Every structure is written in C-alpha cells, then in structure tokens.
Length: 180
Image (cartoon, rainbow, N blue to C red; front, side):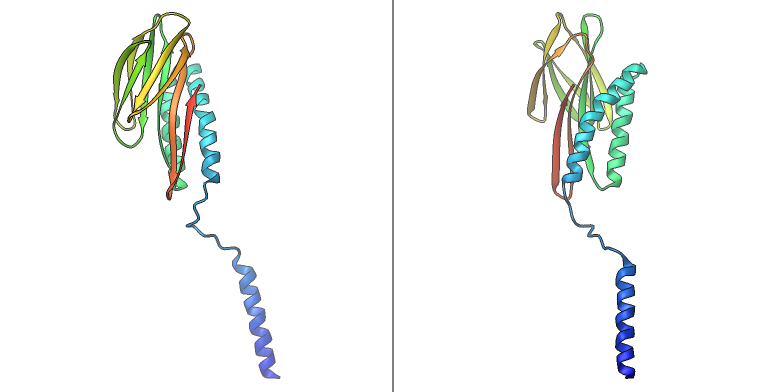
C-alpha cells in the first residue's frame, strides 16, 4: 500500500511540474512571416517619415534618424536591416538627389537624371547629395547600385523617394523596393 502512495505522489508532483513550467519556445526557429510583416511596415513608413521631415523642414535628417532607429530596433529582434534610399527634391530648375546608405559598407550610387549622369558616394550610415538640371513637369531617372539598375519617371515639383531594403535573419532574406 505504501508503494501505491509513492507512485500517486510522484505522478502528482510530475503533473504540477509539467503544468507549472509553461510552454517552451524554440529560439532556433526562423520563420519569415514576421519579417514579411516588418518589411511591409517599413515599405509604408519610410515615405511617412519623409513626409514628417518635409513638414518639419528637415526631410533628410528625419529620414536618416528613422532609418537608424529602424536598424537598431530590428537588431534587437536579431533581424539585420540593410537599406539605401534616394530622395529627389526639386529646387528652382534643379533636382537635389540625396543618397542615404545603410548597407554596412560604402556605396556609389550612379544616378542619371534626364541624360545627365553622376556618381554619388556615401559611406555607411551617411548621406550625400548632388544637383541635376531638370526642366518640364517630369524627369526620367535611372539608379545603378552594385550593378542593378532601376528606372522610373518622377514629377518635377514633388519630393519623392526611391529605396531598396533587405531584412535578413538566419539565412532568410526579404527584399522590398519603395517608390513613392
């Protein structure tokens, strides 16, 4: 009879320990659904950050600060964010193109605005600018970075952004392009 009480007691203790420990989480799981959601959020929020900066008369510094904040925030979740953006601002017959580089290494952005080409060098975490002549209601742009070229048309009197961002974690990579 004593043996049965020990067995029942052991089962009771095991049951309490099982339900008391709670669920276990496997840290090594690298699902990409959260990265898709985060990339989509960044795709929407970068243009919003630019607009907030325009309203505060500091579009480039606001966008740079938001990008650095995003990199730091995602790093806490073990997600690496690499991105670059180019902001096109019309100022009296010219377009100021500001290139922000947050790719982890220096980059040269080869920008062609309506047939005029120029290379814009930006160190990691830095922003650099160049001016291009522009006439008419629109201008054609091509941007080449690391051998990949994107071409699009922009409105002359509208501040615009073109960006490429990449989120990576444990071999999963999500890339998004922004044109707004």
